Amino acid sequence: MEVTIGKKTSTLKFNYKALFNANRDFSNFDDKKNNLGDGATNLFTRILMGDTSVIPDIIKVAGNIGKVSEDEIFSAVDELTADGEKIDETLNELKEELKNSGFFKKSIITQKENIQEALPELKKKEQTDEVKKQVTAVERILTLLNDNL
Image (tube, rainbow, N blue to C red):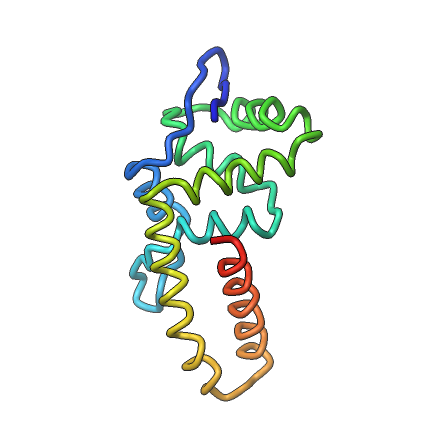
């Protein structure tokens, strides 16, 4: 998959560098501010949920584009999606790219397994409204991951 930013065309590469950037820039943090290394899974899940704002984020981690303006990124997204006419096709192509990358797939599967292990513990907590929402969200994410990997 190629993207044009300004006058430069870059191939999106879903290699180790992209995985590193995804986990650095899009991971959650625990209570002690430790990076949970789930950035790749977060990007993949956002694709599965149809979150179009994931497209510029993926371009940033996989495009090796350096410092560019937001306007240049937005123009690249417009071009990539044919001004929004091909959003679903673009998201599907990005999903397939992540699934076909050994680095991303391994990371996403590992995170999915971690989530599966953590879910029973979450369900054991006192079921406040907040915990119930968390359980529902985690179950939805697991369903999406199981259905798409």
